[in-house]
Image (tube, rainbow, N blue to C red):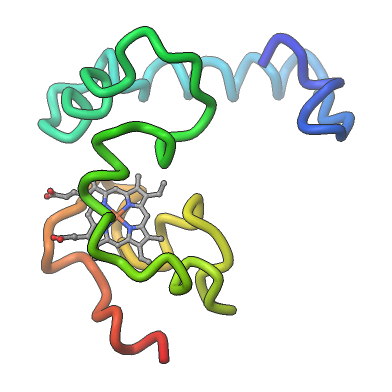
Length: 107
Ligand code: HEC
């Protein structure tokens, strides 16, 4: 949030009010402040690695290794970062199997 003018090659700068609102949200909802099991697993698998995406953690790689890598290129998914394409209720923190779409629907 401190260097948004250099955001993956884009200038994503925001005004002070929006910056504060998003930063407050990120701090309030970070894995460090969660008691969810998956948050702890993500945190533990970051260790002291310098990563910028949840999908680069060993925990994520381990839990998704049975998925055909080609599926992440599917037009309705596009990217590993599109968690919601498969985890319908991920914004509520629901990652249980019953909240995962049937992957055979992406054919
Ligand atoms: C292509 C669909 C797909 C995408 C995209 C995807 N996931 Fe998953 N995810 C799955 C499936 C399927 C499983 C269950 C794998 C299994 O049980 O073998 C899973 C498992 C998980 C689990 C473990 C759940 C548990 O109870 O053990 C977590 C946590 C998780 N995903 C988080 C994420 C996050 C965060 C993202 C985005 C950065 C993401 N996933 C992107 C399909 C996906």
